[in-house]
Image (cartoon, rainbow, N blue to C red; front, side, top):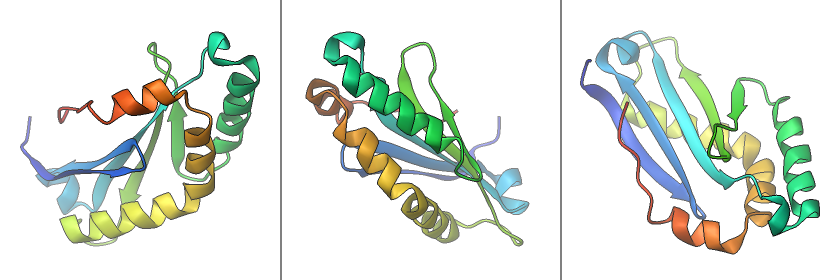
Amino acid sequence: MLTPFINFSFQYRSMAFRVWANAEQAQTGLAFLEGRLGVLPYTGDGSNRRQQTLAILDLAKRFKGFTVALPDGHEIILSAELKTDGPATPAWALGEAISRLADTKRMVDMIESLQPHRHLRDARQQSTIAP
């Protein structure tokens, strides 16, 4: 596996976002953005909260270029490919990630507002390892 050429993370509120690309991907103008938005509320957290979150995620499917996934752990993962005509640089990737997140800010804020507070508190202490 190639060493990441672009590899950084940042937080918006309590949600972790990561941008990465290996040298070959960056040379072709490609990078990846992934945000971990929290967990899908369980019925015990409030059925209304869970229904609202599912409705928001259903709308999220309409954001062009974004993918929303709910893997086994019920974590909400938002991802996107970032593309440019020239080589991808870390500075470009940061600007592009912020720009793309601005497009989804309202949705991300709504998901954050529906998160059980205990999960948000725990999310700050979690970290991820580059693929």
